[in-house]
Length: 113
Length: 111
Image 1: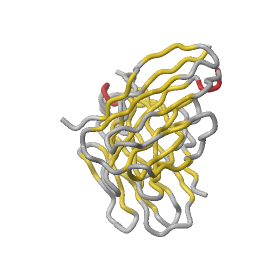
Image 2 (image 1 turned 120 degrees about the vertical axis):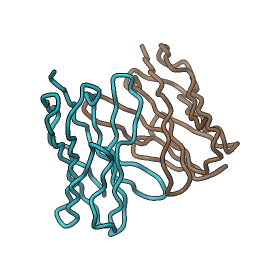
Image 3 (image 1 turned 90 degrees about the horizontal axis):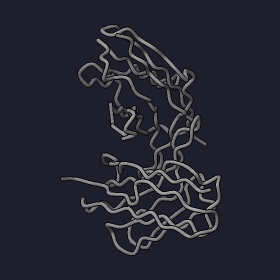
Image 4 (image 1 turned 60 degrees about the horizontal axis):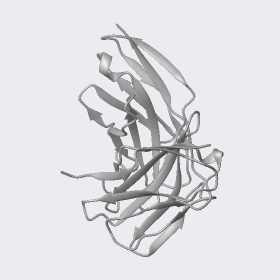
């Protein structure tokens, strides 16, 4: 069975600094997708970044990038030049089956002005 | 505009009173699903549907029913709600392998 573990319930970062959120997962599949979702106080689910397991290159979206270590089953999210609007709950997720997501328990990020 | 619409957004109900949370998408997606979000547990899948008349259980299906009679709609039914079903519920839709779109969430409180 797949599991997704986010070991940091809370993190904080100074505005303009860089923070890394950790995520590990367990799967026996070789081809899969991984995601980071942002959930601001509005509770809207916003896709931040996705990574296909067959791609060796780490995904990047503007200030957001991942460090995908397939052998270690690790998928961390790096946020550079943190902004106040980055404050939110962040969920790591694994896609299983046609389009089912399995989520971690989340990391609450606080951005300090 | 691509949308997944859930109703109601907020509901307080009493134990045992049947309720339905509706979900509708305008993107002609085959795939729809329901999740619940609870503090410290993240989002967990309740049910999913791969197309009309095709539904299957997710990780936490107990106490819920679904139906998929039309491609655009995927209602979540609580036949006899209990306080442990107090939660934030999300509907989601996608094409197979495509981007997953989430609704805005429905806050349900059962007293």
